[in-house]
Length: 527
Ligand code: GDP
Image: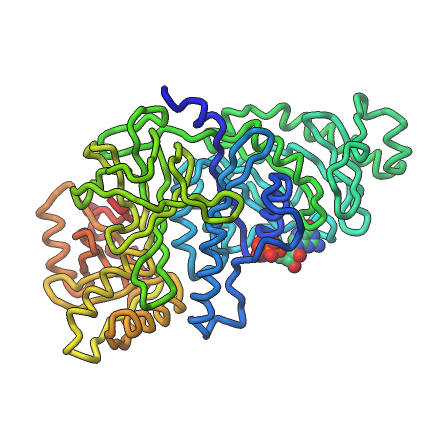
């Protein structure tokens, strides 16, 4: 229990949302509270601009900028907060999914006007799978949005999670007057660009008080009384354990751009959010307070300068203490490695760090030793599990245009897919290479990078697949039969796992029905 104190004070989380819901704005307000930045507008949105979708170099440049804000560490009220950024662009959804394996909780931003959107759904699916504790921030209350009760119902239904309101809005749009804090029983009156001064807060010990009528007007005071009675009756006090188990999500209402309702959430966040937790490995749980160091790589970012092939690997520390210049064990490669210039992301500057503790993220310079999911330990032979690979949505066959560069092409494909840019499949019993991505964008990036970094020239041929399912069976004979009958649809992933490539949902369902002994998995854990 050597590092108990360090563990207690850390919180590692991500803010997730559909693009434009207000993630960047909320991040910025958090950093302002944490003193990590002084002025609004300092946080660059790492959003991939729409106009750039055909210009992949511009996209890579923008992604490059986002490395600097990949992790933002700051202190607030004695708590050390590591905020991991996630790209909002749908084509980089896999990046986001993997980042979610490195956090202990998330804040989900929902736009009160648009409600639940496509990315919100996909992101929450991952959180549910991992039972990640979620806090919901309903944003843009200064705009005329959906009816708040309808919105809660929509979120509960669409995201399959139970909600628990912590604050309650008084009106919305131009009549937005503030929020009632259900826990502290106080009202915060809305003023644009709040600086979080206490005078804005009125304590209301009794909702029937006439002060309420004075401050809110008869009609809104009456509505608030009714709403609160209803909510109290339905929800009662939040049971923090229900939140920690991922079953119930506390909800806050506010307006990120006006810095309104943000502090309430941040204060609650540091009070209830999980500190770094024990983690699952192939040899059982690793205790977060174990003496020995362990951690895993959840993200790799390429250097944008093609002359420098080095990359940055992001390490999440899971137990013990990470130290600069100390030899650690790279489990997959079975070799010892050390890092002379690991860096942390405190206050958005890259600083060389001497040590790091569970919950921290460290940037490691990598010359090709790492792939996503790799585990580092202090000599132990285990690896972290639960880092998923999702089915790509677009598949293309790689056609080599320059047979003289076959070796370079193979190396390039391996390295780029190690970085997690795409997934690589090899036709079963053949040599055909198929690349699977979540977005068209990646094919352009891969083609460009193969040529400029590896000198390999390729084009892509479309192949008629829509989903990759990892297949297993308790009965090896059944699996063998299935592979033989469907050999045109079978491939091997990079880790040697068998994959069934389905042409359509209809084919997939038919095969599942016809082959009850074969199990079809929609995600593959990297290990
Ligand atoms: P992201 O894509 O989720 O990072 O969203 P941004 O933080 O970039 O916000 C998207 C747009 O919504 C920007 O134009 C923001 O200024 C705006 N925005 C953010 N919060 C609010 C809010 O509380 N009210 C209003 N009216 N606009 C907001």
